[in-house]
Structures are given as structure tokens and as C-alpha cells.
Length: 152
Image (tube, rainbow, N blue to C red; front, side, top):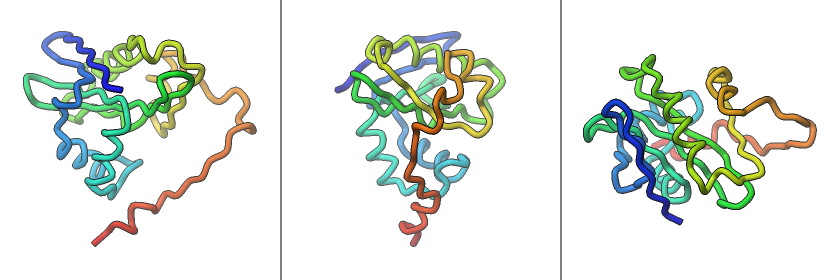
């Protein structure tokens, strides 16, 4: 399902149009600068983009941020890979990105949206996220070193 929604705030464009994405930029950030996807291969970033609702953040034609929601568009979503380029932080763009995401009609009726963060709890709580209500009911299969198998 391809959803095209765009919003511009102070010359910064927020867009779900995958054709605008700079996949090499996204890969570079995730693979080198993120704490959650270090070493992720380009082919996996490409596959994750193909199978998610993606949001790019742009100044002029330059991509400066990204997020994606893995969803069935009916009951569940997982917010992942949220970032704003370091050069553009402290301008409120993370908040505007979250406002854009929660405004997407196709996500408004989901029963549950999850995310994982090490350091941005104060951002997400502003948009209704909170710690798991019944953490004992959730389980995970976590493979933190999985991308090492792709290393040359």
C-alpha cells in the first residue's frame, strides 16, 4: 500500500513518497551513526523501506531525516529508524516529524503502535507513548549481532 502525504513547515518537507528517499543516505546513517542498526547492509535497508510506510524529511532536495512504520494498516504498527541528521537537530524537527506521523489517517485507528528507544523517551511521551502496560505479556526474539553475518 503506497500512501502519499506531504507537509511543509518552514521550508522543511515531510513526505511519505518513497521516490524522494535517498536510500544511500539512510543506509549511511543507520549503518554508521545509529546505535540500533550498526553495520546493517544496504540490501536490508532497501528491503525495510519497500515493506514499510516511510517518512522522509527534506530541506530543499536534501534528505535530513527519516522514520518508518512497519504496519498492517489495520491493527498494529512499529515505529522504527527515527532520526534527524545531527546538523539539523535542536530545531524541533523531531517533534514535527512525530506530529506528521501521528496525523497520518491510515495509522490513527491502529490498536497498538510500539517503538523501542534508548534515549528519546521524552519525545515520544508527548505523542501518547508510554512504557508497556503489561510488560510480562510481551516477548522478543532479539538478535543484536545479526548484521555481522553480512560483513565482508
